[in-house]
Every structure is written in structure tokens, then in C-alpha cells.
Image (cartoon, rainbow, N blue to C red):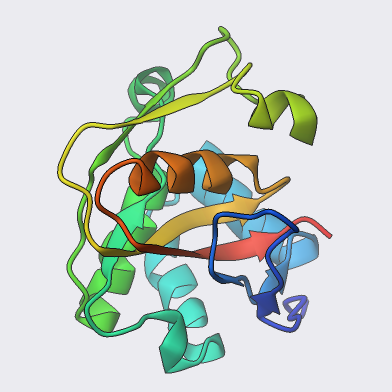
Length: 179
């Protein structure tokens, strides 16, 4: 099976806080299988392959010099359940390949027992299923890292938290995007 490659620069939605959003794969077929294997079947070694896909598919400007890589944080409940943070693994592998520092100034709190799963974009953006807060010093320039962008709400909430601190520019890199 072939990976579903797409144009990697996804234009930010109108009113987006993100300067850019890079995502080289459609969340379907083998790309979806890789994400699910990483997240739900503890295939943590896949973070190495997925990071290499991102570095190979994206132009250098997706990882600008001086930026810090910031993984979208997992909730404490998901971290306990899985035993690892998939976005953190991906961010670590990207940091090794791009030589950009990794920072973790965000904390994620689910405001519902189930988090965001099954919620639409409006409910996600309202904070009904997720709250993100700044808990450390925010870097000036950030590349947010996550495995999949479903509605963009999580990335927007992370960007909002970062911009409430001293961050001036926020872009995002996700392994895949829901079409």
C-alpha cells in the first residue's frame, strides 16, 4: 500500500492563530494505520519512521532556525492509559533530525471524561472537551507537533495558550490531516 501524500502546506483556516500548518499525508489507509499503531497499539518505534517521513516531505522552512519544537500535550489520563505521549515521541525524533530544541510549556486538561473524541469543531474550539494552559516559559517561535489534525481545534487552543505568553509565532506540523 502506498501512503496518501498530499500538498504539505495546509492553508490556515480563516481567523487561525497559526502562521502555517504543514501536514504531508491524508489521514487514511496506511497513514491512518501508522497513527493508530503508534497511539493505540504501543508501536512507539513508529515515531522514528513518522519523523523521517515529515523531514523528507517538508521543506526546511517548516522547521525554521530559532524555533522550538513543542509537542501537543497528552492528557494525564491518556498518558496513564497508554504509558507514553505519542506527540512527545514524534517531537523528540523531529528534534533529533532538525536540531531544534524541544520544549514543553503546555499542559492539557480534559474538561470532559472522554476528552474531545467524538466532538465537532465548534465544541472542540469552545473548550468543552479540552483545556490547554501555559505552565512554563513560552518560546518566541514555536512549531507545534502532533500526529493528526482532525478539526484544527487542538492546535488552535495550543496556539492561543502560547500566544498568551511571550510567543510571537506559532506554526504546526502534523503527520496527517483529516480531509
